[in-house]
Image (tube, rainbow, N blue to C red; front, side, top):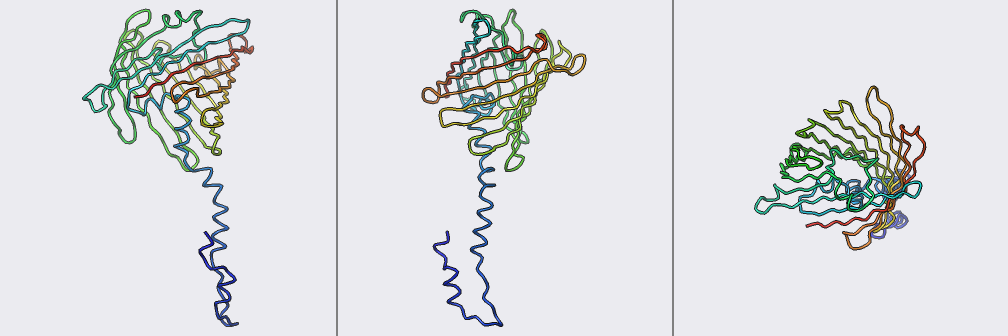
Length: 317
């Protein structure tokens, strides 16, 4: 940047100076000094939104599916190894097909264990792969894309949930991204839903993200859920540190606290977890290894160890 400018020595030699009119120093050196000071700030704060989106896409976060309008198929199968040599299975499937001639405003959706009713910390394990597929709830229905209203992306849907019985599920979801400043961003998601047999429910979560440097992301996730049949709040606080090792590998270190508000607010579980994720082939085949320790109130907060091996397939249209 400085090569195209005359040097300070050359500038001084080309000026006629006198005691009455001393030579004015050039600003190049000062500008260069302050630009060097400003470099780390720009390095840390640039691209927070694109960086968090890249991390979320790599880990197949649900909000990435929510934000995109195309068709997709998302399949996961977990093999969970617990203390005592026990092994169980849990799987999930999600699909979305954009209907033709709707300008991507209507789509068919299919989900196993809809997000509104899922147990994130203690999923129910099955002894065989067949049981893992059979003993689940499934939702199939229609979802509409209403566009944006003051930066809110709104998605109403209606369909049927099949578990031990058939029931109607209606829901409306509203998500929004907030650009707080150069270093911080936030993402708020809300879901108001109603099951025909058990009544209304509401689920909300707020994510706060900070890019620490070009390969490290801090995230704080605060969540809450309330349902008619329980009449109390289920809440959680999850702190995550994501390390992007390279284009095909990443690590997440997590600590979480889970609790309820009945009869007062208290903790029911504590979680320590490490998630190692690797892209095996192209952009649709992934493997995840996850050692986990859960401290459950019902077990007097004794540590419960488990290790999960996940296979994941993602197709996007």
